[in-house]
Image 1: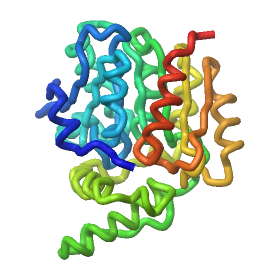
Image 2 (image 1 turned 90 degrees about the horizontal axis):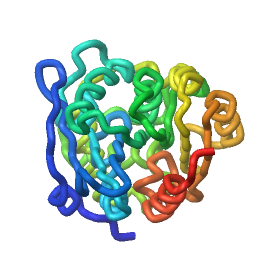
Image 3 (image 1 turned 90 degrees about the vertical axis):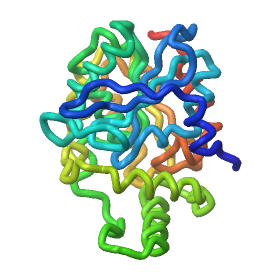
Length: 284
């Protein structure tokens, strides 16, 4: 599978900044601000950046959306949030930024993993502008009682080759379901992003924070997971049942076959097809 390069995708984006504490939130935007299908805001996973959406943003812009991808506060190029160090601390600075960037327009919001939990918290607190919420591979459902096991430490290593191999191992352990999915670009994304994670000790992912927030969300909610997501392997039925019990406005729940946690990178064509089908649905 040929995936686009980081520089090729970045070169098509406009780089924007909004305030965050003593610094700013960095956003990348694809498409026209007056795109016919309106704004689509996307938030990445933990220890990530906009590059978690590398294989998707151009297809979404070509489908008629104005795509805005944040580096969430404390990740990537963005400053740390001014109050706290977990998903709940993201909500206010992101809200300030979106008011500035979109001038009060409503938007579709999609978040992956940690960003999906953040998106749920955001929509519960600021519901008036979120037309539709799409959650991809998110934690915060009260189903993970302890941090994911099996990851290897890398910060103590000084040899770049050793560190790269640990990043490759960790990607295969948690993020991607198949060896051939852990390509050199995935490793490059990982080894660029994880050292810029300045929010250690996040804990909300291991609580029911997202499930609690979804009880308060009344816009249409759509959910997409990889069938082979390591966080929920063998518990797919429990995962779906949790969403159906937690979200009164759940419109769809989809599994992408043969894909792990980072579903939109591992199976981009299948993910993009499911997502666009989802976004074409009328609310019921």
